[in-house]
Image (cartoon, rainbow, N blue to C red; front, side, top):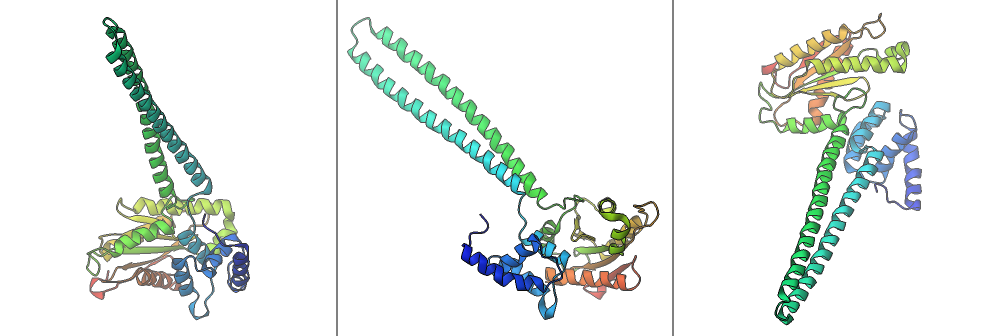
Length: 341
């Protein structure tokens, strides 16, 4: 259970969270409350650190930032999936337990039978030994059949455990994917980014590169297309991102209209070329048959000893420069000017 606070404690958390929530730009819905509840109860230190960095100097959280915090620090496996997995695991464990209990009973029964046959053999009159041995032989056959049945049940349980392991792996994988586009979500992207930060190539011409791209005039696009066709457009953008990504790249949807491509082991020239390829690909999309989409992009490269926050901030700075210069363009900012594209 994620929340274990008493009624009094949760009421106090509500009184503390509401004034903070009301100062933000995000709507007052359950996701917003979950974020602020976990912050004011000090139960989620990672969330609190990122939240405090976002609201420093009087800044306020908007809707995308709130959802990003929720997806990154709170969202778990789908509740129905979690219940199903828990039930299935319980069924398997009960089956194994029943097999174990039954095996124990069979062994005790066979041990008592062996003792009885031994006593019978010792006390048997001449000519009666054959009958006792026949009983022992039949008892041994019965035990063998029982063991064979138990082994079959245990093998079935083993196969169920293997299937559950695959289901858990699938569920965990899906928890790292954006449900609309199938690209990595923010949590999946952050995991890949953490891996990139450990790259021995950081600070070299082959350091990991990052592309950040925003769909231009997204609010206007929403008004023009409506939610259904807007989702179709976002899926088309995601397919374009996926089409240029190689197997070792990580393509992600970070926010509603923001996409990313994390490129391990590439120079800025290659990253710049991919960004231009992506920009041109998106510019060919016409979700309503009239208006073409466009994408503003920022590109940068990981510096030596650089944090994820600084890496992302420089990519975002490059992205904002593209938007400020008229949109539908690529801006490259190098961590080290020696490797500038």
